[in-house]
Structure formats: C-alpha cells, structure tokens
Length: 397
Ligand SMILES: Nc1nc2c(c(=O)[nH]1)N[C@H]1C(S)=C(S)[C@@H](COP(=O)(O)OP(=O)(O)OC[C@H]3O[C@@H](n4cnc5c(N)ncnc54)[C@H](O)[C@@H]3O)O[C@H]1N2
Ligand code: MOO
Image (cartoon, rainbow, N blue to C red; front, side, top):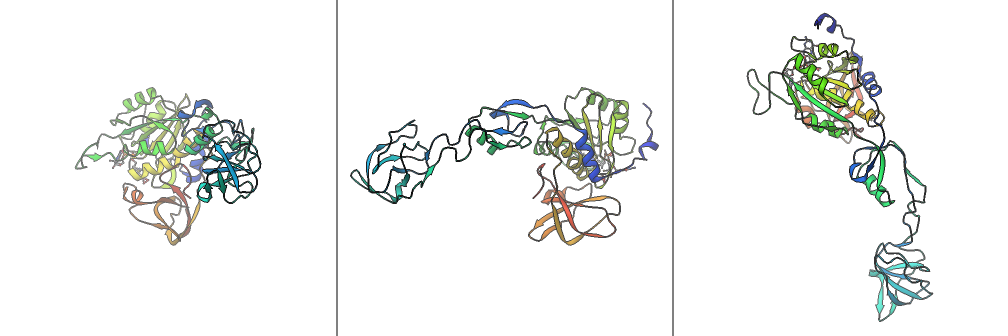
C-alpha cells in the first residue's frame, strides 16, 4: 500500500473532550451474562440488584448477652446457640443467654449486653430499654427492594451484599479484553538506555493501566518496526481493544496509520489537540475491534491511554464517561492557546499544585503526581482545572 505522508501531515486534531466523547461512543457495550459471585468482581451490573428476601430474615441479637422480656430483674431460663433456628418463646420476666447474630426468641423486648448484666444464680439484673440491641427482620431490606441499579461496578462490597441477600449469581457485563503491542526497533527490555537503545517504559505501564481501567489483559507483545508484522498481528489478535505504542507520528518507521489504511480501518480519532499526546489515534477494524495508537513518548502514551483508552473501556463495561471534578489551581498554570494541557499535579488542601517534569518523554512528573490537571486551552493562565485520575477509571475526587 502506498504511504502518503503529505496526507498524514494534514490531520485535523480534535479537541480533547470531543476525542474522549468519540472514543466512548465508538466502543460497544458488552452483552450481559450470568456469573457466579467468584467470577463477577470488576464486572458491571447488567440488571439491578434486587433482594429476593428480607435482611435480616428474622429478629437477631446485635450483642452478646441476654434476650429479655419486659422489665428486670429476670430469671435466666437457658441459652440460645448461634445456629439455633427457633428458640423457645420468652414469657414476661424471663431471660435467655444469646450471642450476636443468633435468632431472638419470640416475645423478647430487648437484649442486655453481657458487660451490663449482673447475674447471681439464675437472677439477671440490667438495663431494659425496649428494642435495644435487636436487629429487626427486614431492617436492611424487604423482599423485592432494589439495592443497586444496573451500571454499578461490582466490587467486594457489592459481592458481600449479593451474598448477604442470598444470591449465588449476578447478571453482569463482563470485563472487556484488551491486547497491548509495543513497537520499536530501538527498544530494550532489561538494563539501561544507551546509544541506539531505549529502555521500554510503556510495556511495563500498560498491564496496570488496563486492569485499573477495568479490563482484562494478556502479556504485552513486543514488535519490530515492520508494517507487515503489525498488519499480521493486528489481523490475528483476538481482543476487543488493541493498543499499539510507537509508530504513531509521521516518520519513515511510523507504520500505524498506513497499517490501519491497509486493513481498511475507519479512523475515528486522528490526533487530539492536547499536549502531550497529540498523535494518538483510535480506529475501528472491519469486524468492530478497536485499535488505539499510543504515541511513543512515554508520558504521551500514558495521556493517550487515559484519554481515549479509558473512555473506550468505560463504554465496553457499560459505564458512562468518567466525569472529572473541577479543582482550584491557586498558583495558576499556563494555558496553551489551542491545546488542552495535561499537567502532573499534587493535591493539597487548597487545590492542585503543578510539580514539573511533565515533558512528553518524561515519567518523573506523572509518577510523583496525584493526578493530571486538565488545563483547557486559553490565552493566559488558568486558576482552575479538571482532574484526570492516574490510577483508576473513576474520577479523582
Ligand atoms: N515529524 C514529526 N515528528 C514527530 C511528531 C510529529 O507530529 N511530526 N510528533 C512527535 C510527538 S509529539 C511524539 S509523541 C512522537 C510520537 O512518536 P511515535 O508514536 O511515532 O513513536 P516513535 O517515533 O517510535 O518514538 C518516539 C520517541 O519515543 C521513544 N519510545 C518509543 N516507544 C517507547 C517505549 N516503549 N518506551 C520508551 N520510549 C519509547 C522513542 O525511542 C522516541 O524517542 O513523535 C514526535 N515526532
Ligand atoms: O505526544 Mo507528543 O508531545 O505529544 O510527545
């Protein structure tokens, strides 16, 4: 296929927010499936989580001590074991030893904590506030209550809640699969950079970025700067989103765009008006798989993933585009006249503070930063910016 650098040089960069929106819209949400709780962490609820029963199902003791009926003193008539199904009913003036979580006997009006109990023989004295230390049946939820809407990320608390209400399976949108390809003849994967050798800094970032965005990733593959290899690997890679680092600019070894053209891909984003990261690109192959081009400069690659990659993965998971909180930048930060700047910042009680070392080939700034400030284009300085999380697919605050 003929390479036409004169056409590639005339890319129309889209605004940073528009690019995120395009990437989100271009991705296809996954199809909901039924998963056991042990395989649902990190997926997204495809249907609301509805409780089939009441929680608790019966009145339960909230403390170790004595279930009592009426006012004290009481006569202790026995003990309820933790797993006992239906203990005897209490009569007025009676008490029964009980442990936290055990079913409270019918007729009990409160539970006296063991620390507040004075027992002499079978006589019990203690405070008797009605209803105290009893978790009532249905207090947490009633049968049919909707506890969570569809679209919530399944995390450990959600799994625990599902188990609490008695569910064994959840209907979820599975985590999408993402493949990571790193290109560059000059790259080495051990030891330092030197003349003619550049230590690969993008390969080590990609698995963590992908999993923090909520997708599944296999081992990173390293490719030489060969258009034929890239075409072959893109054809055979079975993932919903394929990341390709390097090869995104307009030099003789920059094969990504000619490769996409050769594969008949549709370019959805062909450059973004941002710095770093302007050569990033997103394309759709004929079968629907998406290809995300990450620029070779490491901070630029990170920005591209956080811009287009996170947006596309969010949609595949069935999530909205992560919203970005606004924060003050008390010392101000210089704007670029036409491009959105992504600036490493530390978060302080009064706002965000740029920390420097934010050049496109550097990771020193981003590695030390709490977040990236998204500084909108403008003629002068900004005193507020939005925050892009470096460590999760959700917003920072
Ligand atoms: N004529 C132009 N040249 C460049 C442009 C441009 O618009 N026109 N854009 C510049 C910008 S901005 C970036 S970013 C880079 C993008 O380059 P590529 O995506 O084509 O990547 P390479 O040329 O292969 O590498 C650029 C740079 O990054 C180093 N690199 C590459 N991969 C890795 C890696 N995995 N780990 C660490 N470093 C990596 C590579 O050695 C180069 O130094 O293009 C500019 N040029
Ligand atoms: O992507 Mo380049 O500046 O934007 O390194």
